[in-house]
Length: 84
Length: 84
Image (cartoon, rainbow over all chains, first blue to last red; front, side, top):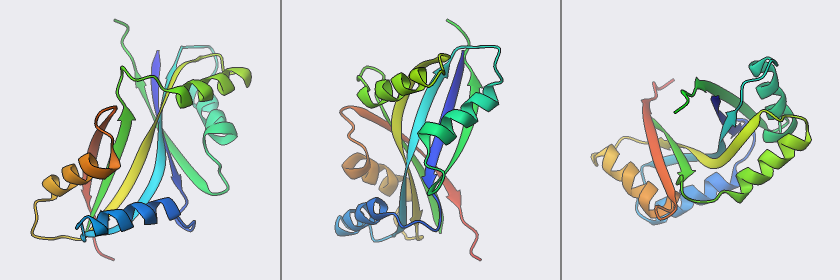
């Protein structure tokens, strides 16, 4: 079994209204140190081993479903899970 | 300046209908290897340095706004940003 951690973030050039809203809330709560907030997604996938190349299928899943590559970037990390 | 990466995930015991929906979509796209999906949030905060303790204010911001600690866990990483 593999645990795959996928991070999906908006591209730098894309405005992030959700991040601006969070920043505004933090400011009004007194956290004036916060200069910027960007909000993204974090997904944890558990994959069974198969004879397909894991990097190919993870990349395909990200490009086809998990991230909108027009406005988002993604990166991922793969960890081996030791069966209990 | 500090860059803080915050990861907010649903607690293990909490059902994740969004993750189940993503898993269902991946299955119907032919990715039968996917045994489980959990969806969380990923936030990048940029903080200006202040004389308040960074760990204290990051933890406060997470507990008060960024995560719902009844059903979510959070963890964070802090990186120093070198000014350009």
